[in-house]
Image 1: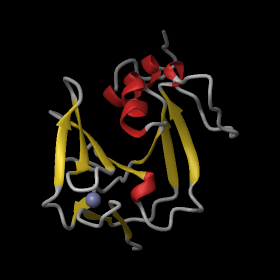
Image 2: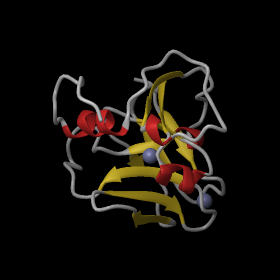
Image 3: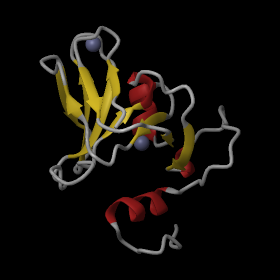
Length: 151
Ligand SMILES: [Zn+2]
Ligand SMILES: [Zn+2]
């Protein structure tokens, strides 16, 4: 099995993923854009993320249900996870910033989420599914299985 590696800008935080990553999803929500100055490009490993060097890793509770991990030295946005979620289950509900991962140049775009919060000043050219906030929440919480619900 291939191993995927990643690190922050200064290298104080490193991580690995025990699978090949070939898909990236994009979150257009207001919080992600404030955190990244742009949409959040993230990967969702099925088997979770192993933190290598992590002393500089800091977590910020950004909402009632999620927290964001970043490097306390260089400030790189690195991880997003459910704060009270099933963190020990497959994937751990944890995502990693695509930009922090090595060798991801050939990955494909999997989907857009929170598209109803996207500003007009940028657009992507792709055919990936576009999920509204309601559709995104339904997808991640398992509510309204079927995915046809929106607004
Ligand atoms: Zn760093
Ligand atoms: Zn977001």
